[in-house]
Length: 190
Image: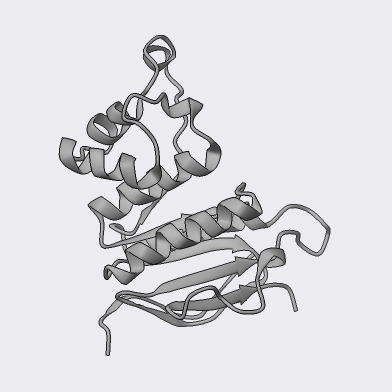
């Protein structure tokens, strides 16, 4: 039996009950969240952020592979490259950075902001897995073809013994998860 990386007791958030669960090493829990509340107001991504904060309060070293945006004047004049992101921002060794870039299908000299949204997200997820044994990630904003690409990338890390919680929109839940190492949790108003 795998070791338990994270345990969450049952709790309620925004009127939705989150069941008790154990996240075991080498597994992925995919939490699907209803995208709109009962008043038809957006809920999904906002609730994802609240859940991430809740889980990080329980386990502070449970990192989120959060989207990165250049937002300071220096990066405006000196655009961030894949190389700078991996080595300076993520503090990853040069040889490892080269491997990650190759795995994602980008060049170290590529400008970070010029990468497609899916490639940026893949780079962030892959670098977070490189630095951590367990992470949280989300599929928000990713198109259907990109979801398959990211699922494959995440599964390759899970097969290497890494562990994750992934958040996605309930409307996008497939009838069957693409890999056997995924446990689904559905969050919706009853």
